[in-house]
Amino acid sequence: MLGSGDGSHIIKLRGLPFTTTVEDVLDFLDGVRVLNGKEGVHLTEVRPGRPSGECFVEVEGPSDVEEALKKDKENMGKRYIEVFSTDRQDMEWALNAMRQSENGFGSLPNVTDDMGIVKLRGLPFGCSKEEIVQFFNGLIVAPDGVHLLSDHTGRASGEAFVHFVDKQSAQEALSRDREKIGHRYIEVFTSSADEVRAYSARMEGGGFRSNRPYRPTPYDRNDRFAGRFSGRGRGSFSRGEDGGRGGGGAGDGSFGARGGGFRRGAGHAVHMRGLPFKASPQDIAYFFKPIRPVNINILFDNSGRPSGEADVEFECHEDAMRAMRRDKNNMEHRYIELFLNSAPAPAPAFKPARSFRNY
Image 1: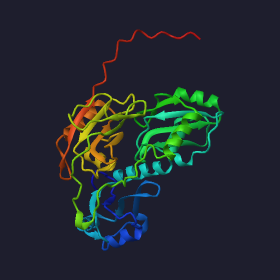
Image 2: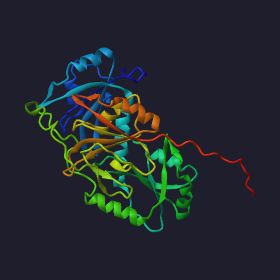
Image 3: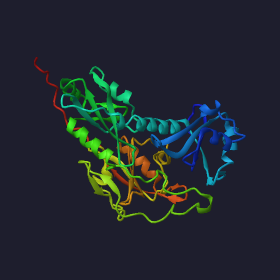
Image 4: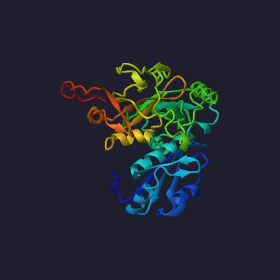
């Protein structure tokens, strides 16, 4: 299968009505052998209760992939459905991101000033609570003490609050600053009950989230291309180091070190322009394959609609340079412009002979 190398055969459906069930998918794929029946169909959500309009389906063999692709642009009800061939890596990436959203901020209990709380920044996309607990191996994280945070669209922001059984444990947790989860350096900061309460108030008030459906354009057969390639808004949504809004201007193509709201310490990035407005993080990751992004941030205009731009962060400068080879390549019918926001790591400074510490 495409890029997976594990013998799996997977297709992706896009444009599903938000009321779609597993049975509806199986009916649509009549004649295609779905692996393990209903268990082979994976409907996805942007966040709990908010369907993405996409799903992944595991099928039995290459002939089933070909049969499924014949159904591309056929209707489910009044909606036409796009059918793609994909791989297990793409599917698991999307499902892991969905699980992260499901395990997000909503279940946070009331915090008290006696709790020891830290904030993490720079988490890999799709990082699980279990990975964070393992990151603090040797320290006692409070029960249900890991809370992954969301951005204004409801997607994972790469940040989390972690509270411990006492303040001393939280103080010891600061020693893990700049240690890694996967290939990512994780920043660890002291936090407080007040910061958690302020975040909770913003989320409950809708301060970070948009009521805009995840897929901004309809897939109705009679309005197939309406609005898909219309002009972009000029004010892109971005976040600076302080978490506030910043202008990510849509005009001149320049992209400074703080453009697009990358977290502090993240220095290997590519800015994308010209994306289809329905492009998802998974589409962007697929665009750069086999190079794997470590963070994807789709930008929105002042009205909450996709701006056609995104910031994509890579593990190292070499990966960002390799990603730039995709400049002017197409995503669907759009050619994508790429702008580099990365520099090679400085040469290591000369180190004097090691001196032994006196104990």
